[in-house]
Amino acid sequence: MTHTTEAVVAEVFGVPRRDVRVSLADDGGALGMAVSVPLPAPTLLQAARNPQAVEQGGGTLFERAENARSRIRAAASRVTGSEVGRIDIRLTGIHPPAERKLA
Image (cartoon, rainbow, N blue to C red; front, side, top):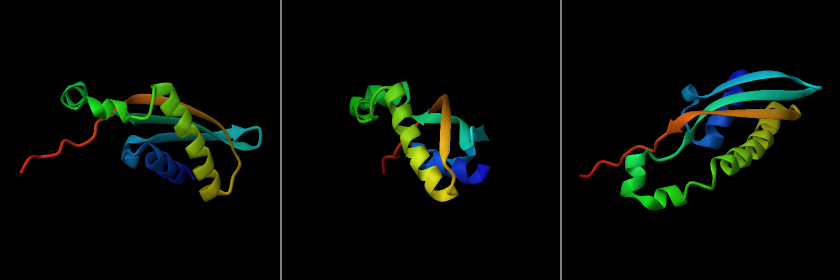
């Protein structure tokens, strides 16, 4: 079930599964999750080159984490068939988008 929930988290955050860690525990009969994941965000150089990338990021770090928590809860419940309880999210860094090469 750990790999399944890691895949859910990776999908929600838009990062590779290899960068996601999930620990599962009982949360009063529900599935508790401790998530460690990098946040997709442009590097400072990318942000300086393209300020719109920051504006399109989806809000503050807290807003993005809360939005992700709701989406993780729904998707994990759907694919595991378990009631999902507490989800703790630890942001471990940033996952910058790939730079597009000029032809």
